Length: 53
Image: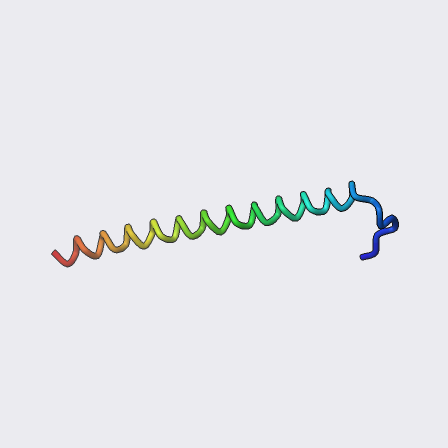
């Protein structure tokens, strides 16, 4: 992708902002999924511990 004006810093800043927002969204999403998965494992372990008693 070539830039018609190599001195167009406003366009570059918009691209940078969009990339940063995308990475933040991806990171937040991964964190939520990991947290939910960990909570599920803890709940499963608690159920197994009750069964073992």
